[in-house]
Image 1 (cartoon, protein in one colour):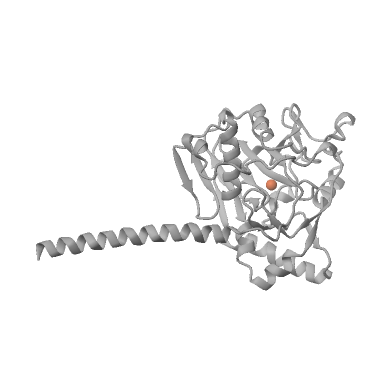
Image 2 (cartoon, rainbow, N blue to C red):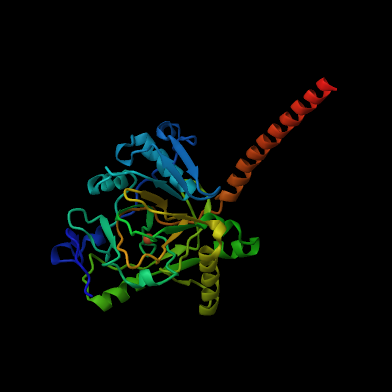
Length: 359
Ligand SMILES: [Fe+2]
């Protein structure tokens, strides 16, 4: 069956927009950096917070993404960097224009060189299960960080589905901070000195198969294997199974061995992951610098159509003075454990007092 072309979706470039993606640029500031660590302005609107796991994924209720103040949007950027991915429900008023406005608060918006986009807003890509590269939906191994082949890979991606399958079609994210933190020290030391080649090869193959004209150059870029998140200052693994082709400066066999291992832990370790079930008007926003994600290819025969705005980030870097999510987590865990112990002691004391009084 030939793909159905949805209204207002531009499948491939005409001469007038054949260089749209060549205008992609680096972010000139780090959105969210320096925001109030307690995020009081943001949480003044939050009616309910659901942490899906201690280290990744939070659902926030009470926030309307189309109505954030500047202070709230900065705090939200910082919160997303800390939690990896943040989920929202009932964002019916986040239409295409508001979607673009939200992303533009955080940096220049990325125009994808190949994925079909909304005709009016080329920064809004259309992830339609009838239009997208079919391999993406037939594979269980499409873990990636958005557009990591670009010189300025994505900081944030904002995804909303306007057609939800009747069953299936969840998205899963995996925590790049923890993938780094759990490595042994000798392997951390090895990886911290390395860079890797990220390529547009999968899009080149798709383009060769379909003959679609691109909206600009299909880029390849070298990026550090261990990346510092500029907001949290934490280290993360930054290689992925879709775009990262090889590690520089080691033999091909060693490169394959390292990438295979990193891809394997990202895909396999359930404790790194959080899974989100979409409803109509749900929105997920994630930080591509420190997470990976994949769709779950289980929704056939149903149809799924999503709209994504992608924010270009800074040039990826590794700062040896970076801290880790593990250190932050341990510090927070100590406070929680101390509170639990204090509560247990208070209860024991109260019971002892009661027993003494009745003796
Ligand atoms: Fe993606």
